Length: 192
Ligand SMILES: [Zn+2]
Image 1 (cartoon, rainbow, N blue to C red):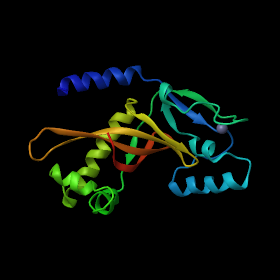
Image 2 (cartoon, rainbow, N blue to C red):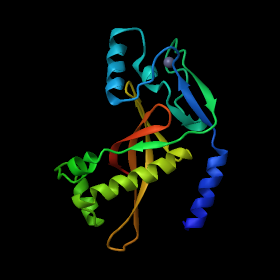
Image 3 (cartoon, helix red, strand yellow):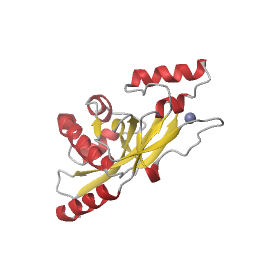
């Protein structure tokens, strides 16, 4: 896709995207992974559903939002919001201590090295993932992934230029949704 076409596409989506915010009334949204874990514990000790607690405050485009009700007696609802200010967090350890560490089962390092990237590119990859995910999420370019007691994950396509000038490679990355437009990288490389 040409840059101009991409910008037009982005603008069109931005103006046609309808956002909703998930509400579980009377509880505080979980802004950190520690708070999410606390909600999971609360879920096992009380009548509150951890899934609902951890969706509280999370924003989705209307047509890609978890389906209500999530369980019997689920009182969650969604409210329409004008737009989100997307924020993407991407821990650099996802590259330095995960992608670029060899594994016998699933060698992501080999793949990234085939495309011309090594551990020295971790900072670049981190910035690139943040840039692309933020843009994609802010126009609703994502697919719903796993939903469980920790919350909703979404999948976002990441495209990298191969350093051997052999075109580009596109793959799926996984992100956890946090309240108020924030997403955090969980899986840098998933299957296409
Ligand atoms: Zn609920």
